[in-house]
Each structure stands twice: as structure tokens, then as C-alpha cells.
Length: 287
Ligand SMILES: [Zn+2]
Image (cartoon, rainbow, N blue to C red; front, side, top):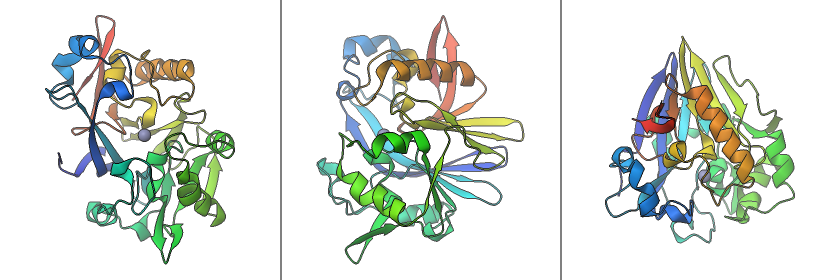
């Protein structure tokens, strides 16, 4: 299944473009064991058709957001990458068109000023590097790569359970090239773009806030893998490193951003962006 790879939103003067690396249909219980068809039934009316298929599978999109201000091109999360040896068959040694796609979206790899990883899991760092003459080199030669200080402090001595090789081929080469800036979890990237700490999925996980000309947007990162988590923030996500802290971050995020903020989901399938709405004490996602 392939939907349109490129989609664009405006938040004030800031342009955000989604560029998909890969979409996979998964059994949601793989990530959220409580997301059985019985438990999903009350949310079906708003999860379908975009976030839950008739057959019970859910689309999981792995995409980047190209965030463009007047003078800065920022890429938020770098997906799976090409040529990377990975245990997951769909991720192994991919030959995708990501670089052509970001160029078509408005900024080729040489034009990227900032690479921002919401966290350092394997599906968020892949395009940090590319294979040139059997070497992993930074894909974005002119960019500063922003890693959360707390995030790196955790992963430098840990293995990613979903892809230990990623540190070797997608993180360490950036550290060695001196292109990494370790930043605080509330770092101001530009006058319109800043980080907010949303720990729990990983200890130094951040979301990305955009404020411009009175409009607000936020990129979730993996605080939310799937929109059902707005309604069920306490369901255990097997990829969360710290479940309780992640749940607290999800609650605080929804309180802060409900209604008037455009919420862009890092793994949400198209249409990807919407609003968090609360009625009768429950949150849902409205696209
Ligand atoms: Zn992810």
C-alpha cells in the first residue's frame, strides 16, 4: 500500500513537508498488546479508515518532516535509510528514493542545515548516514545534527533492542565527523522551532514545537506511535523504555496541545496531521 509520499502543511510562516521512507501494515498488538479488536471497538468510528483497516491491521508510516523557516531547513527524524544491514526484512538493505524525494519536497541533502532526531531508535537515525565507497558518511554534509544530551547519555552505553547496528552505521559516524551538537531537551532551534522534553519512550525523547504568526504545531516523535494512544495513553507500548514516565508525558502533551495545535504524528499514516479533541473525558484525534 502506498499513499502519496509528500504532503505539506503551513504553520504561520513555517512550511512542514512529510516525506515517507516506508509504510508498513502491522498488527497493532505487536506494539500495544492491549490493542485487541475488542479493545479497539470503541475507537473504531474515528480510527477508520485512515489508522485502522477493515482487516484489523494498522498502517505505520516511517517518514521525516522537512521543516522550513525563512532561512533554515530542518529535517526531523531520518527513518530507516538505504543499504543498512537490519534484522527486519523490510528494513534490510533498502534501496528507497528518499534523497530524491526530499529534494523534490524543496531541500536536497546539501541544503539541510539541521538534522533533529527526536530520539535515537533505529527508525529515526537511518538517513543520518549514507554508504559511499563502503564507508558510512554523513548524508547531510552542511548540517549540524542535534542529539538530546540526555538521549545520548543513555544510548552511548546501551544497545537499541530494535537494531543494535544503527549505533555503528548511523550514529557513531556523525559523532566522529564532529557534526553533533548535544542539546538540552528544551533547546530553541530557531525563533519559531523548539524542543520540548517528552521523556519515557526513551529517557531523552523530545517533541518539536513550532510557533509562527500566532499558529501552533507540534511533532510528536514516538511519544505516540499511533492515534489510538490519545484515547488510551496508559496502554503499554512495548517500545517504551520507561512506561510510567511515557504515560505521564502523553497526558501532559495532550493537555498542552489539545484543540488549537496542529499535531503531526511521526508514525501516523496519511493524513498524518490533526487535532486532539476531548469529549466526555476521553481524547481522540480528529483529522
Ligand atoms: Zn519510531
